[in-house]
Picture 1 (cartoon, rainbow, N blue to C red):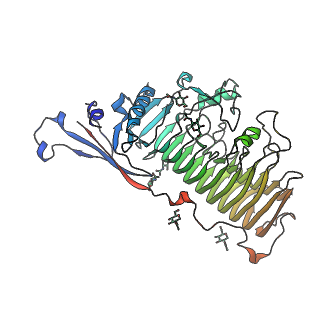
Picture 2 (picture 1 turned 45 degrees about the vertical axis):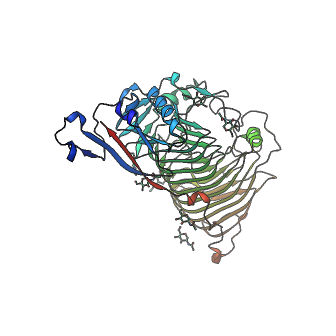
Picture 3 (picture 1 turned 30 degrees about the vertical axis):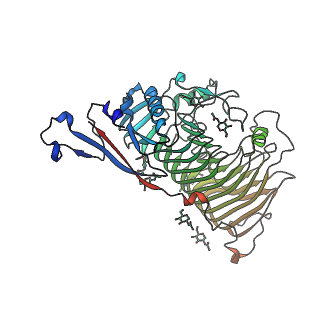
Length: 479
Ligand SMILES: *[C@@H]1O[C@H](CO)[C@@H](O)[C@H](O)[C@H]1NC(C)=O
Ligand SMILES: *[C@@H]1O[C@H](CO)[C@@H](O)[C@H](O)[C@H]1NC(C)=O
Ligand SMILES: *[C@@H]1O[C@H](CO)[C@@H](O)[C@H](O)[C@H]1NC(C)=O
Ligand SMILES: *[C@@H]1O[C@H](CO)[C@@H](O)[C@H](O)[C@H]1NC(C)=O
Ligand SMILES: *[C@@H]1O[C@H](CO)[C@@H](O)[C@H](O)[C@H]1NC(C)=O
Ligand SMILES: *[C@@H]1O[C@H](CO)[C@@H](O)[C@H](O)[C@H]1NC(C)=O
Ligand SMILES: *[C@@H]1O[C@H](CO)[C@@H](O)[C@H](O)[C@H]1NC(C)=O
């Protein structure tokens, strides 16, 4: 990358680096020729042979200058190294205003801890793309959708990471447009990766997304780790992480405060999702902390028409959150939610610990099939401690299509002072329980206290757990 580095004559002060002025042989040469070595290490699924900084492409981190062209030029140039060891692009400390840009394969975007990507509020910087085929429609408006800030499609081996650098969606502008019903297309997300394989999104802070934060869709082998997501708890549809028709995904060590579900697992909407037929399966969610007073820590659905299977959630902490691991579905959705395993939840101040809804509205259009009934079965929860809860459970299956194989064991729920009089309500539900307080509804008969470990949690790893994370280094000379 000598040619790229060479274009930047300006000496830069970079973090965590070894600044080598007047090294042995260079002693006495003029300062301009001093070598500043930008060098650090980080963890990733793959390391890169070529390195560059956004400043090499005319980037200016003053918070005012648009860097859209710099990002597009940089990634366009660096894409040529895809078959030659790949490339990594550093975003140094600074405020980098930018419109949307597209990622490339065998590529790493690294945000310095004091780097902030500021999403442009100029609507012209956001191209409009087609609705997702498994949804048929956009979410905010039936037609197109604004492309996400960081977008990738048909890629392999992509890393978006940093030393906890920030991506600021500057969402207030979009939320206002949405509330005023002035939105022509669906609002952008911060990061969307489509039709891709081997993806890592890690060690970043995402704030004030216009809508959803991280949306991997039609993709596989995805690691999302060490992400902080912050949005006002009243902001519309600021879901944290939405794995959607994805296989083999691992979401770990994330802290999310948002105006919608912290994690929402999806797979397409009604007749469009049924036709596309791509499930979300083999999903791990562990060590998640969620604050979301009007939504769930983890929602399964409501768009689940391609199916959701084999979800393993562990060590979930929720504070001031509406519900824990919630199921949302409806007649017309079709699909399934099955083999769901939840182990270890610590919950404080919740409306419902367990919530399943079979009559969740919001259809794509009126053409949904009224005979497309979802199949909900094998839903396991164990080892849950909750405090200050308004109601233990509200479990509502579908008449003529009960939710079956519900298993709840080793659960202690402390009710709030102003709790509902009846802690459990259950309709069209079948299942079993052991050691649950307060005592569950009659549809979930107690199997006796010795069955404390009643509910299943698979012992074997999923393949995404065995992905090797390497130590990578970034080294770049400024001459
Ligand atoms: C994230 O950062 C932590 C240190 O804060 C580090 O241990 C971990 O390996 C990083 N993970 C990834 C995937 O970048
Ligand atoms: C990014 O990719 C999308 C989808 O392929 C495309 O519509 C858009 O024009 C691309 N943007 C740029 C700047 O190349
Ligand atoms: C991306 O992949 C999808 C699914 O394999 C395919 O239908 C689509 O044509 C591909 N798009 C491009 C631009 O290659
Ligand atoms: C990352 O930054 C966010 C926001 O400043 C902070 O809350 C979080 O603790 C930081 N994470 C790490 C691992 O330093
Ligand atoms: C019951 O749940 C508590 C709290 O999560 C946990 O500490 C304990 O080990 C569990 N007991 C069994 C037998 O699994
Ligand atoms: C308990 O929950 C109520 C809301 O239901 C909340 O107002 C109150 O602050 C909570 N108390 C504690 C001790 O967290
Ligand atoms: C299972 O995954 C964990 C990482 O989550 C790893 O430490 C362990 O070695 C894996 N076990 C096997 C048998 O591969």
